[in-house]
Each structure stands twice: as C-alpha cells, then as structure tokens.
Length: 315
Image (cartoon, rainbow, N blue to C red; front, top):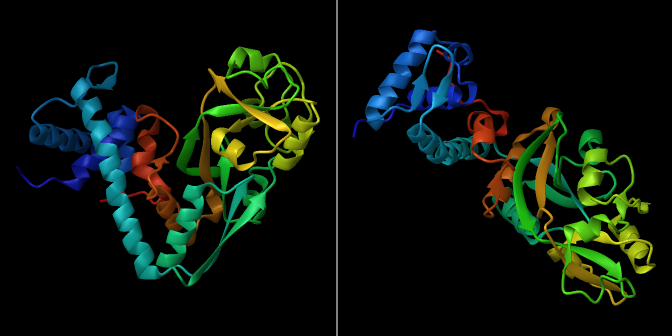
C-alpha cells in the first residue's frame, strides 16, 4: 500500500464536517479544485467512493461514514501523541487546581496520581466546588479545570474527557413509599418532589438533575441535599457510586429505571487553557474514558480541533 498522506486525511475530516467543497477549501487555505484533488487521491488509495457530490448537496457514502468512524479516534490518537511530545518538550510546571463536586471519582484520583508522576514539577491539587455552582470556579479562576456532572452547554467552556457513566438511584427517607421498593420508574420519580441545586447553577443543568414536575428544596451542597432527604422533604437523584459513598442509616437508595445515566466531564475555560490543563486532560483520558459526550456524526469538529490546537497545516 502506498504511503498515506496526512493532508488527504485532514481534507476528508474537514469535508465530512462542512459537507461543502468551498468552505472546506477556505478552512484549509486551498482552492476548491485542490480539495477535489485531495479527495480523489484518498478515494484511489481506499478503492471506493467516500463522498457523493451532486449539484445540490454533498454527503458521505456508507463507506465514507464507516471510514470516518474509524479515522476519528485514530486521528485523535495522532494529535495526542503530538501534544504529549509538545508537553514533554516544554515541560509542565507551576500548579494545577482541579475542582470536583461531592466526591472525587476513582478515575479522577488515579489521573491525579498519574499526572503527578509524569509532571513532578507541577503541583496538582483537588478542590471541592459547590454542587450549586458547577462552572463558577472555572470562570473565576478558583480552579484551572473542574470535573462536573453533565450536561454542559456553556459556550465559553471546553468539554474534555467524559467518564463515569453510571445508572442512577433516588435517595429517599426510610419512611418514603419508595424506600421498600426494589426499583422505581422515571415516571414515578417525576411525580415526586426532588432536591434541586440552587442558582447560580443553570436552569437546564438543574432540570437535568431534578427532572420532576413537583418543586423540591434548593440546596448548595450535596450534604445539604442528603439532609433534606433524610428529613423527608424530598428525594434526590444520585449515581450509584455516589450513593454508595454517601451511604447513611436514615436514607434509602433505590434504583431508577428509564432515566439517562449520570456522567462526569472535565471542563475548562477557553481563555484559561494551559499546557498543564491539556496534560491533565490526557492523563484523565488515558484512564479509559471517552473524549466528548457525542456520537461520531456530532463530534466531527472535535477530530480536527481537539484541545484547541488545530492540526491543519496551512500551505
């Protein structure tokens, strides 16, 4: 097989995102005809059509979709290797403060140990941040990055590795009707009052973690929420590991069927990205987590712009 040309792969990735030859050329700083040449060369190497082009639209062929699905993680791995080399060449010094909500996941603590081992010149610390303010610490510079519960829809923040996808439970007082149940449904939970995070947590984020039509008490910390639960004021959704970690005698934790899994993600501010933050994100990603919280089709841009270091060479 002939030697692969990185430029052809880069062209395909951008075209798969833009689905427009003109815009692809603009992003790559080449002519539209050059985009066609690069694509044709790649298709000859593959031995089949990757893109179907008509007078009205551009779309990936089934072969192109399969190729994109395999190419994205491989390309991310290549970018990661380059980034790791850049970090090693520059060195990562100073300090890194990583926020977490409620309890530090085992993957998070393992990533911190790995980061400290690889970068002993950089002091890495974990800092608890309020349940009710998942993004404030990053915006205010209290922490350099934070592990927060998803979803994250903040345009000024970067979502890095996503991990710890776990089933959810509802925490209730021992005399609550749910307490003696083996499991409850999402519909039943939605009809019961649930503890919610107080502002400044965004409304969409609060609704995701308290999907109930019945108002419940608003709290600022996880412990406040469990206290409200124990007092019988409301239930509270928690992932199973968090429920196990905060097990207490006056609260029952009942599995909930039909609700999305809970997940954690590392976020940092777009203007506060540093070599240390990127190196820690890589350390966390190496713990066996996924990059981003979207399917392949929705994450095409991430394959080209991972870690905000555009790999496209401009000629």
